[in-house]
Length: 159
Image 1: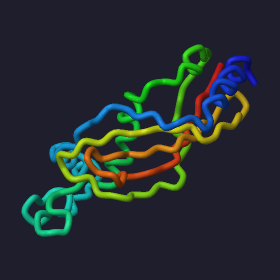
Image 2: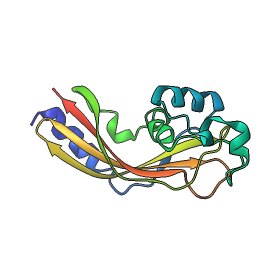
Image 3: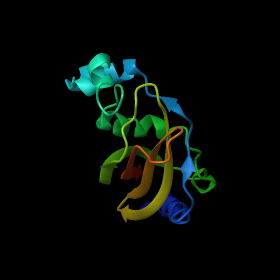
């Protein structure tokens, strides 16, 4: 294990159990939903047909659950980085390692604003790599119940 990985591991360990940190709000537009439908070939009417979707209990179109999940990457970029991570060096790359316990709890209506919160809940060393598990929550502005929760495992590889 490299010295950089050891230092980073200590920094990441120190954040386990810290309070969730929120990022910035981001609008999920109908255009984004339509683009996602085209990219995934998932044109179910509840996502793209304004008139039919208005007749459902949702009262309008909703984002795909997997669109909301995929937005974690963008939503997490506005979450402030913990101070202890700022002195970490020697990073070759960061990659997605996986997800645990993904749950879609509340639909995201088109035009809603969402944001992510992140809370470190686990860290493990894998040679010159570190897996950091974060509890991610996607909140919908003005609603108490979140859109989704998931444990996101990111792998950081060190020189």
